[in-house]
Length: 332
Image 1 (cartoon, rainbow, N blue to C red):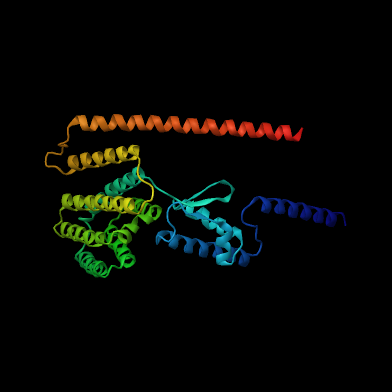
Image 2 (cartoon, helix red, strand yellow):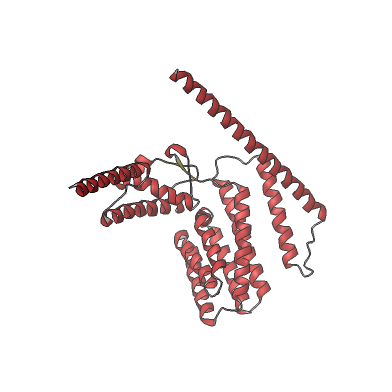
């Protein structure tokens, strides 16, 4: 009898502990595996729907996502919506703020330039290396994809063009034995997938892009590493220019003088790197003073941003201290 009572007391303690843990977690603890699978399925459905709507441009950058409204639309509780939003935050598609506020993430010109530059480096290197691994069968498939993309461009089908575009580059990169490199490229695609909206906002870009695809295929067929790398890098920089141009056309907020100067500086840096990489002598034709001017300006901007962050942090601390004092006075 004593053992039975002790066993029951232990079970009661475990139940209380599990209940406390469940209260602290966003997802309730499920002892039934079937119920847990159901919760995951609801989260994945909400996540998939929101991601597709963000990628299609239905939700514009800066749009607020209201959890209660999304839950009602999908006929679920708030919990799967919150979990879906956390997944979208990991994908770099939204900003999830305290107290449950979520917004479609906006990227500045500086970030867009940097992302396209990094993509140009990675995809340019991967395309160069593919010269040693691509087969005639791969080249035939690339030709077929170019023909499909040309039809999409003539029909103005941006969504289908975007899918074939992704398949085109994957066909090239899958020939490589370097999984780390291709994984990094895929992660950038996933994190900045909304960059594909260029084809929707600038219809002429589809035909330009496909012309650049054919240049990449020609370089691969000729087994020219330098031409393949150059064509892939230029392809990304042309995509970046098209995206910036399309964004300015649809952006309601005008760019400030500071943003314009940053953009000009990054454009200069891209050109300097490009010339030093692909010129016959391997050196930039730009004057060293141009590079020094940009480097000095970049350093000043970095210091200024650091000062602004410190000032913002100090301001938040002061507000927090004032709030605590008011609460303390209220308790008294």
